[in-house]
Image 1 (cartoon, rainbow, N blue to C red):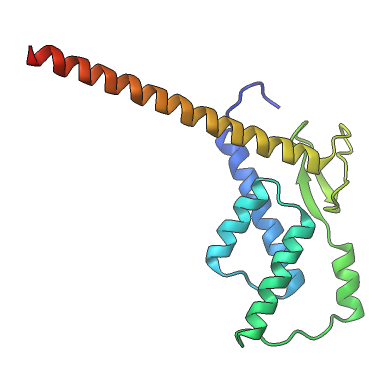
Image 2: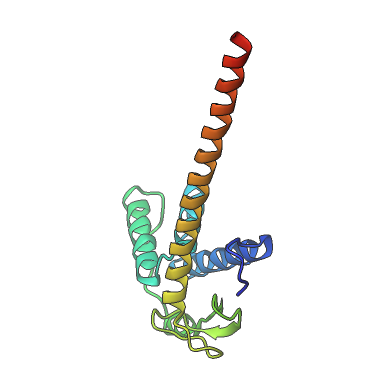
Length: 162
């Protein structure tokens, strides 16, 4: 990974695409299409380290709410072929430590990168924390800059009024 603290546009787009793939995979698995506001929210949560069990719980809860509201038909239990397909389903994962793309990732919480051995969930969580810290630092820097601009404006105003 680059030594810079900034995420490039390409990295952000790749992470967004990965989150979209995960959401599409869950929608297919649960036979349930997320409402638009939820797609964005869950995408953001995924980028910030939401894990698989939490995502599954969100889908199951939303499906139950939609079923109870009468907006969704009751799902039939999956056939043996559908269960086998769900078990074999994999998703591509990119290691945040070494940028290796693992096309056969299972999505498990303890899965490691075959190239460098990093645990995906831990490196994703660390990246989310790093991004939060970076955003906080940028907010502090912007506030300090705004204070300086304000001080300069007040000083110019005082000099003009003399």
